[in-house]
Image (cartoon, rainbow, N blue to C red; front, top):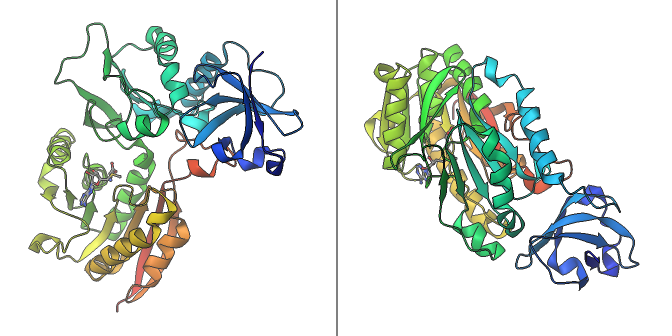
Length: 396
Ligand SMILES: C[S@@+](CC[C@H](N)C(=O)[O-])C[C@H]1O[C@@H](n2cnc3c(N)ncnc32)[C@H](O)[C@@H]1O
């Protein structure tokens, strides 16, 4: 008998439009030990099958559905999903850009909830965020190993391990030979050579979700004339791409390690003479003279500022204060590019923060992640990156 999880009567059928997550409070009964290595059949209160899912016994998100069928997924479902994800990336044409830094597996978006695989040239970084995927890590590594030439890092954020109740394995590094302690991840982005730190690092090392936006904003900055201010520059991304397009740029970050990589990337891309970097707090006064402006483009790309709906009032206040500090530094007909990687902050929240600014602003673009970050339909929690471009039309 498979592990079976029955939903409460008042939960109805839990249709596909409600997304793949089943929360603990939706469950009436469980038959069999809730084992993260098992797949569970989820039924409604009458025992009618809803679908099969991965189990996280300790988590508030108790099940993540992998199908909506009465039939169990085939034994090799995981390998099939991984193969489909990798084939889908091949068909994106990124190699022709050339781009070799990309997301190969995007959790629910690729039908493998809890698993991210980012590719850096020949190297790969796996990020595990659920107990069910932690239980399958050896199987995933065994599947990937013959298909991966370079180093393989397996990581698990402590926050996810605590939330899901799995032991965060020590960082696993595989390779033949194994990567050196000072190994750096190298990749091309639209033909430009970048390096990122190997784990432990921010996320998997780089933010590939902004790749297409970095190019779009560089084109915008070149058309306007610049200069560009890149707040939360990390590896130098928006600033390096703008400098490559002929624009003078300044990148700012709080992290000294990120700035070291950003400077290295500027040199690697041959744009150091048009680029400077500064360390600072993007939510602070930003009163260094070189940040006074005016700038043709200001990009604000902060870390996740709202982890839950409860954080929203504080986060939106902080964002509004940051933007009102920056708005007077935008040149006439210049752009304020406001990024948010918090699922709870909607496009409407970004609009509201800008609507409260002095002067007249209009939104010219609403962007998101690139096609290597697919989202399962109706998995609203999978939507997180919002990038709005606002143009200054009238001064205050
Ligand atoms: C979402 S990432 C930015 C990604 C980057 N723009 C890119 O295109 O790759 C956020 C960045 O903000 C930096 N950061 C976090 N808190 C900060 C703060 N208060 N002030 C400045 N930078 C901060 C982090 O070190 C990280 O590099």
